[in-house]
Image (cartoon, rainbow, N blue to C red):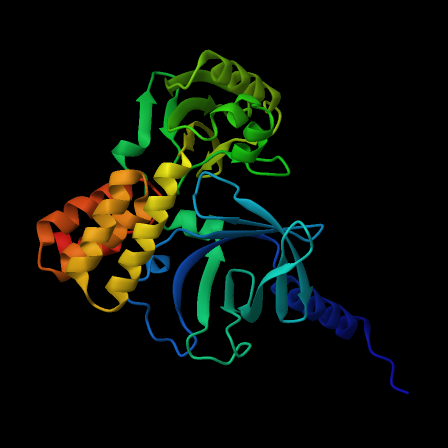
Length: 338
């Protein structure tokens, strides 16, 4: 029997390590594109095409799915069986199944299960890259800067620069658990907005309440924020820690506003899918009358306006959608509004 030499074994071990590392799904992944399985592009009628999406796979089979760059997202459990990833809710029920089409150090392509497993052409295919690589592609704009002093610069939280909450849930959920007053105002139409700065050392200061509900809500929020002081990772720019201003919103919508909005939005989507854009526009207007903050209805309204030839109104609404910082509509604006 031939005995392998030391050099050969080193090469084999290196190849094994490279292969194992290439299969590492853990970390933060940002969606760059979504298409159908046959690579057909999604139409602009599908808001998912421009929706921000981040998957964060953590040890102990935890998966956070976020639709906002400044939120850790919703916690799920996951189980990986070779190429199949099953996503489960807190009760252990499978809520989604994904098939890994490709995975490497810097790229992840997954297919979402359809009616016939993973073979339907209308199965969705998601393309992801590492969050760091995604952020490196973005540039700092002057509007991303909060203030400049002799000693330092404070940035606003953006997709490029953002402090991270290191708790076992999103910061929103962390606060919700520590604000009992939230249950009291849940069924009301109310808005709470606060900003704070996460410094280079992870500490918090410069708390500002911009929109308040009542003194008790604010008191409990400040207490929750103080409780989180050791759970923040500062933002980084070019390898250096920087100060970041973060923002958090609690928006409460009563059922007599939310339910009509939801119903009108569904009717609008049905009409839009039937290319009846005039009817769809009327429904999205009704949805927004009930809940003006529903950015998806506002997006669909803009698409209807674009299809009806009202380009100026569509571009105005797309700019409003952009300001919600939930959808990546820059490319759509660039193509249609410049």
